[in-house]
Amino acid sequence: MSDRSAQAQWERYTQRPLLALAVAFAVAYAVPIVDNPASPVLAVVCTATEWAVWAAFAVDYLIRLALSPRRRQFVRTHWMDLGAVVLPLLQPLRLLRMVSTLLLVGRRARMASQIRLTTYVAGAVVGLLMFGSLAVLSVERDSPNGNIRTLGDAVWWSFTTMTTVGYGDHAPTTGLGRMIAVGLMLSGIALLGVVTANIAAWFIARFEKDDVEERRQTEAIASLAEEVRLLRTEVARLADEREQQRS
Image (spheres, rainbow, N blue to C red):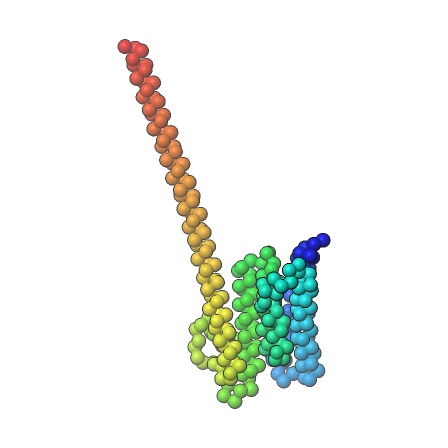
């Protein structure tokens, strides 16, 4: 078994377990925010779960690096994975662990050929909407001038921000909340661009298919017309020969 096949097999076998760990991370991240204030025991369990999930992704990156036949090239081509692994160590904030986990899950999900673009975009929209709502609620709930106090307000704000509508009835007032808003706006614009490009590509492919079919039919009609013309010429020639024989 070659190193490359070993790396591919590891990525294939660990994809579903890592996605399950990501779901566990989402639950651990959401529970203390929704159940506020959370009990000390519950907060410790959720924090430990978040760090355990991050550690699992870090170990996965190191194993993939060890199995790679060209480790320098692996580091260069997977720099986002490395950044997501190192990011929580620079400043151990729960928001950074959330961002790193989203990046790693996205990177691993894109490796699966069976995941279609539409499914990936839908999952990205739901994930960003959920995590954006929880993140802004966690930083804006206790802000003196904040107006995002409930989960419903946070979900509504995230939805209007991602769709770039921005009614203005709810807005972040803290620096970290505004950073989250910038991330959601850029992500929303990017996802809308992907969806628009995907729809445009579908229409273009459909039009090209219709054009090919129309050209094929046109060529078939032209070929048939040419055959009819030749047949008429042959019939006229045979009629002339018969007329000459009679005379």
